[in-house]
Image 1 (cartoon, one colour):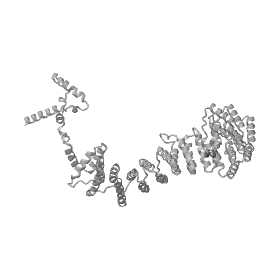
Image 2 (cartoon, rainbow, N blue to C red):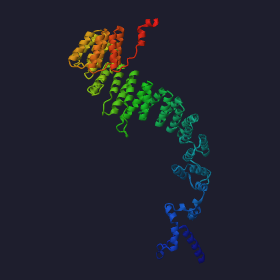
Image 3 (cartoon, rainbow, N blue to C red):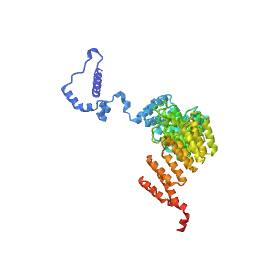
Image 4 (spheres, rainbow, N blue to C red):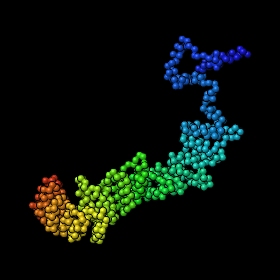
Amino acid sequence: MELAAILLFARLRCCVRRSGFQSVSTFVHHRRGAPPEEPHVRRRHQSLSTTYEANWRRPMAAATPVENVAQIPVSLGFLRLIPTERMRLMARTLDAKGLTDRFAGWMAEQRWADVKQLFEFWIRGTDANGKPNKPDVKVYNYYLQANFLVGASSSELLDFVAQMDGFGVSPNTASFNLVLRAMHQAGETAAAEKLIERMIQIGKDYKEASPDEESYKLIVSLLFSDNRIDSAVNYIDLSMKSGYMLSTNAFIVCVRSCVNNGRLDALLSIMDRFKKMHKSKPFQPPWHVCTYIADVAMQSDKSELAYCAFEFMAKWMAGGETTRPALPSMDEGLVVSALATAGRMYNSKLLDCSWAVLKCSLRQHKAPAPESYLGKIYAHANMGNILKAFSTLHEFEAVYGNSEREDVEGLFSPFYSLNPLVIACTKKGFTTLDAVFEGLYHAHPHIKSIAAVNCIILGCANMWDADRAYRIFNSIDATFGLTPNIDSYNALICAFGKLKKTDDAVKVFDQFVALGVKPNIITYSQLIDAHLIVHDLKAALATINSMIGAGYEPSKEILKKVRRRCIREMDYKSDDQVDSLARKFNIRMGTEVRRDMLFNPQSDKDE
């Protein structure tokens, strides 16, 4: 008996030594340290040192497969099993709760094939009581998800869902959503629509299977991708009735589909629905999507859609102080386009909203650009809100009136930048002109400005009423307490020139020159026109010479008007002077063949 024990001990000692283990006695008188190495043992370790050092983190990596198996302790024999047998053994030992926990860990590790294989072994087994294993819906959904992630088709997933009844499990929303995701990836629009309708019908009796937010997101984005916009809008309505809001990605697909198919009306109806739902469940499209919608809407003159986009941008601005990262500054070019669209389509809401977004975007660090002010003035003028246009003009003057810009005179000139406001003042003739003047007279002082009065004077000139223009000119100082500027005198010269009152126009010119007011190129242009109306070519050429002496170059338009009058009057000497001026300033005058055909139709017939 003792001999058998000694032999068994010797065998175990060999196994331990071969496995690399060292036995240490727990008795005090047997405790010892590591024995000193013998010379031949040291040489053996030195021959394996290279392999060991290269694999110091995983010493078994350098060994052969046979050596690896030999080094596994006998107590870990479970690991020697091939994967299939290991799965079979695991399926026998796990209950439903343990299987759920194991699936959760494997899904996080992306071991989808293992989840699928283990479930298939487990479902064929029995529990501790000898009854067949029965999965719950959570375990089965793990199985469905694993099949989806390994690339199963939607038809295969539908078969798996149909087999749930055989296990006494009812599919829930998550089960159907996995099938919808497969259909979404494959672009199976018709099948997905049938499935969502089936979910709606089942959900009437079994709430756990009714569509949720993800279900509606998948079907809506799939329908928009297939350009079935009307059907997608119906499902958006169903989603909102259920208390769900469209996701950002689905909304981007919606915008792209509506724009590509020219269905901006459908996009407007969807955004109106979002605004109605904003109080209960806020929805905020991304900033760049809002700007894109506004740009597309203004190109198509859809002012209501542009207003919706700017309204969402205003909500972004309202929370912009706490948004991180900070919102980008508003593109003023987009605001100018919005102001022009508002004036064209008579949409005051778009005008006010776009201007408010611009002011909030600038954060009071700088003033809006002149183009923005002019766009707002044009919009008010076109909509007939002349007093609001004058109020904006007064603010514009306060900001840029004393600016050092080179074009500051042109910004407030009724002949150039403010000409649309002049036209609006005479839209209905003298009725509008008198109403505008009376409104400006009784208005608040912050509306009154010299630029506004100049627009009224030029409006009188366009109505060929020099007397009315002169009376308003005199009221600049007497009534409004303002000082006339060069544009005031230019508008009065224009009024006198149109009615062939050239002498009065020249008197006005001499008067303000004597007061120290410097004439500009518009002044000389109006004087030249006044002289040409009365066929006084010499005075017109003399005015051109005075303009050149003042440092201004005659434009091509001025020289062509003078040459045209020379030809009609057959004053070839003056015509030669015009040609000389054109050569001096390198102006290509061109020919007047087409215009001559209108004035000499008989000569054309003779030829």
